Every structure is written in structure tokens, then in C-alpha cells.
Image (tube, rainbow, N blue to C red):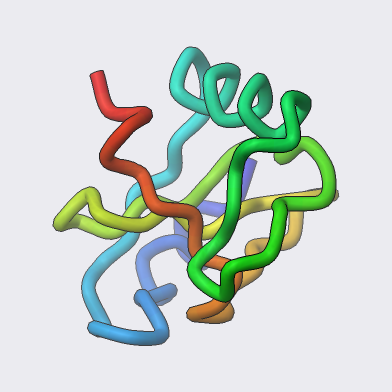
Length: 86
């Protein structure tokens, strides 16, 4: 989990939109796609390993992975989220 105060100040590196912390079923679906080797990030690279959570842009287009408690807020590391939305 990311500290609530930190989450209040974090923003998308591309659009400066606020980010929402996401875990649960959507992260499970993302991790399943990572395990299958089918998930690519915005940079076109296969996502290397499972993520524990994510920071979802308010427009719900991209999710920035959180691994080992650290948010990866690099544009190319963003994961397209539309196919994982409920």
C-alpha cells in the first residue's frame, strides 16, 4: 500500500492527472496476462514480472505498476488498462 499523503501528491508523468491506487481483481487479470507473456507496456516491451498493485490514471487509460512498494512512474512503463477494466 502507498501512503495516503504520498498518493495525494503523485501525478501521471504525462498528463499530470491524479492517480488512484488499484489492487484486487484487475491486478490479478494483469498478472495473468504478464504470466502468459502477452502484456506489453507503452514502450512496446513485455512486462517482465508480476505487479503488486498499480496507480491508475483518472481517465482509466493507463496504469503505472507498483512493485516492492515502489510506483514506477515512467511513461513507457505504463500499462494500457482498457482491456482490464470491469
